[in-house]
Image (tube, rainbow, N blue to C red; front, side):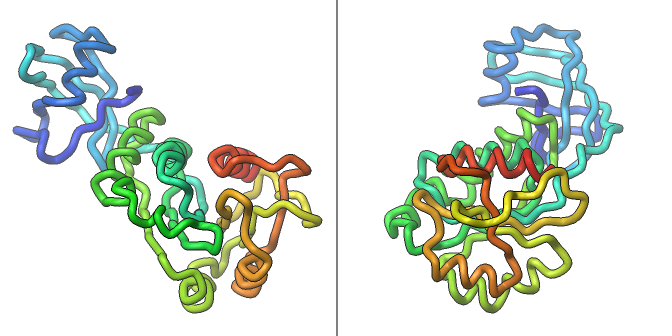
Length: 235
């Protein structure tokens, strides 16, 4: 981890924190930390700064914490993502968290298998775990918002137009569409489909809601690759 992320329950005083579990193991095994070391730290949904390691043993670590730096700015984007297969979902959630996406809507699609919605990786604690791993990687503290929408048509017809209002609406989809724009300087609402892409009906519905289809070229990419490629191209 590139940032030691602290939660409210870790603090025993305004400037003191105790760590156990996964983060303690990381201090021992990866950082090979010792008392007196200075570490990059941040408070979940708060400021970043430095932590001085006061004490480290097999059961816990005690840090003196000074937080005075804001978290990096998020990307001005809302990402609509057709629910990917469970193992891919974990990697994608980490990626979007690390890249600074502030809001993600996990959406149903014709090509999303019904069994995907039963995965334990969709439970709030499981999603939160992956989001935190992404924040630690990127040195960020602010958790993205994850919204789950299991019904495509009601969401696209009733809620998406207001969600996308005032933004550049885009649908990533292979085909004879304009190239995805580069280095935009406005808010974006971006929809990325499942493996195999959106079906024509879904592309049309998204278009009616204000999202224009765009493409990345002739190559067909995996969803996790397309997410990274589109975010990097747009911002």
